[in-house]
Structures are given as C-alpha cells and as structure tokens.
Length: 245
Image (cartoon, rainbow, N blue to C red; front, side, top):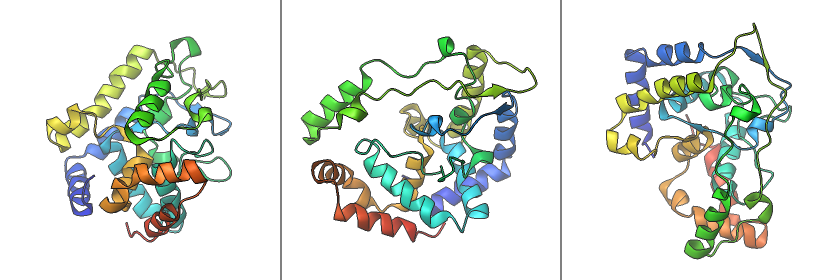
C-alpha cells in the first residue's frame, strides 16, 4: 500500500514523463468495441497495473467527486468480501451496468470478450479449490461453495468495430507494454512479485482503508461468512466513504 503523498509523487512523475499519454496510445492499439453492458465482465474484476490505477485515481478525483462516497463504500466492501459474497461486483459498476471509469478502464477490462472463446484463458482449473483449502487451513475460513465453484462465463456480446481484429499474441505484447510503466515507477523487487498487479478496486481500497482495517481483513471475512454480518465491516465502509481524494 502506498501512502497518499507517495501516490501523488508517482502521479506527478507519470505526468512529467508523459506516461499517461503513452498508456493511452497502447490502449488505442486495441480494436474499438461495442457491447450490451450486461455486466458479465464486471462479475470478477480483472487485475490492473499500478500505472493504470494512477490513471483511474486521477479520473476519480477530477471527474467523479459526487459519486466518490458510494464508489469508496463499494470498494471497501469488495476488499473485505470478494471471497465472501457471491453478489459482489466491481465497485465501479453502477445500477444500470455502466462503468463509471469507462474512459480509463484497465487493459484487461478493455480486452475481455475480444478473442474467440477458444483463444481465451479464464483461469486455472482447481485454482479456487486450492485457495479454499488454504483459507481453511490457515485462517479457519470456509469459503462459500458458490464462490469456490464459480466460473466466469465467456462473453458473446462484444462486437469488434471497423473489422479490426487482434491475435492473442498481440494482446500479450500490448499487455507487456502496459506492464513496463510499473517498472519505471517502483523498485524491481516489488514489481517482480506482482504486488502491483491487482484489481483496481483493491488498489483503491489500499488507498482509502487504514492499515488497522486492512490487517483485520481475514477476521472480518470470517465473521461475515459465519454470521452474515460484521459491525467492523460496517465501520470500515463508513470510514472509507469519508476519505478525501
């Protein structure tokens, strides 16, 4: 988690070095798409690089001040209950299935549904089962079966515009281009451990939640799974809503 002052230092560095412009130029290489905004791709928020989060943070601060309290509440809830509530969706998704940060959405959001199903990788089989076992043995937490067995459905509602197609290899190359910014902003030992490649909602939660709240994540998750509620969670959500970007 980066202190807010360090976050602004990195934003200033990225602005000075034109990283935001370069990031957009990479995004522009992707096919233009249209979709029915069904929210399928927002069921499981995709990981985003720190550079992409800095881009999102700027957008939130400059364009979404009115919606921020609700977004921050949902980000805090997502942080604690990602593995505890099957109904949790991306905090940037509104009631009409519209993305509040669509102009600056991360690379992995932009590419969901772009490839044919046969070329798409949705995760490793058994990955969630292994995670569930880890939570049981290390935290005495039994993840809900509907979460352990959940599989993200492929999307057939994305339409490529202007007949512009892209291969899986090219998408990998573009993703590597996006990843390079984190290496320019942070020490290599942090980047190499993939500590900066997490959902944008988690990046945001790391910013707005106190260290004390974050270290109690497992305790809150267990309480919620066991009882269906958590007073500590309610408090942390309220605290997050009052954070001033």
